[in-house]
Length: 131
Image (spheres, helix red, strand yellow):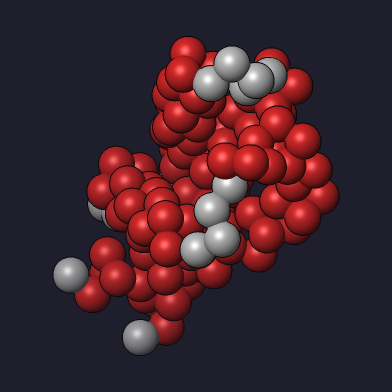
């Protein structure tokens, strides 16, 4: 349990600042395509990050935080599947959801999840060795 909590927090420390930078940089893509659909409340985003972190730990780096190569590969897969599912469902349901939004977000999902899984796992392993 302690290891999972440390891996979760370490992965979260990696993913949150990177995603904030991405969303501020690429946010205008989403704003142009979904401005009228966006909520003022951050509550759904908070739930997303909680679930996203739990999936990263459960399915990728929770058991072997030190194996950064395997964690990066599996993280890229999970990020691709996670984001592609959301984006394709959005395209199926929303008339104005564009490929210009879908493709960068899916690519970013694969990259950031690979980074969170590998660097977060590495950081967690370093912390676990120290304590």
